[in-house]
Length: 66
Image (cartoon, rainbow, N blue to C red):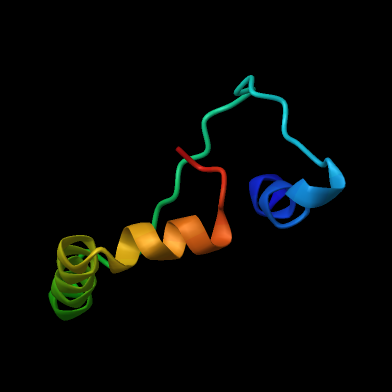
């Protein structure tokens, strides 16, 4: 959220400290037996990565993410 707000309010001089204080990891949990959901999620991630949609979404919501 901090990166998003800094990007949106950059013209007002808001910036983020360039030091990374922690690693933020995103994970999804699902039942191991739900192979249909797992396959669907993996297909979406593969498609979104190949089309550039994943990077576009990241740039939209976290403008200063590198």
